Length: 250
Image (cartoon, rainbow, N blue to C red; front, side, top):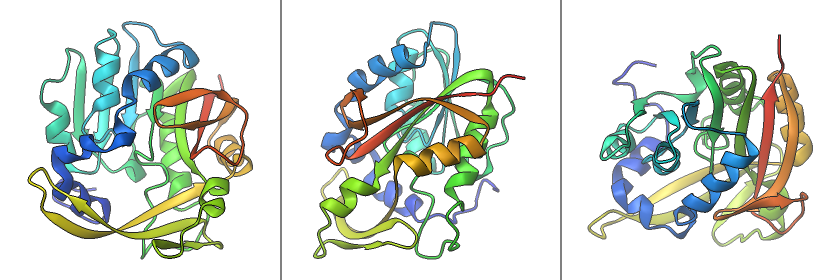
């Protein structure tokens, strides 16, 4: 995608939010999430990690402070600018569309967390096919890690979304598995904007099938929520699933 292209609904949202994104409660568990993932993915100082849909860089910064080299990518130039500010040594960022990842076995591991890219690629005008565009995102993530390299990816739970569906706030497209919500967001100064949110939701079986299609072997699939990553079996009560997998060797 060209540097000046703007063809994704999330860009305008991120432009308005700016650093106010980091005020949301779901961003406050970064250190717990990263600590859990360092163990789950076997990360060590000096390893190279790709952070897909890095946002303002909170996970990348936390990994960098642990001596891990990170390259973060996000479709929002505003978020990339914020991420570059005060980045630890060895942590870099670029604006890049997760649907067009061109890395090839360049990283020891890759992450995509809190619907950083996987699950946010759909929208009102997206194609009505279950593998487009999230399957393309996961294919690129899998291709980016070396054979044997690990992937950690979170996705919103279809079980949780349907169980706690609020028709007054939005609607759930049962055919596509996409939740649509119309909501208000505030920028750093408190100015309000009304925006649309599209979140693709998944079942554990769908995540396993998509991972297999991408050439990944699933090591773990856990039920989690922001700031409370743990080894919980998939259930109906947690907002997200955390997939931990590795690229097939050879």
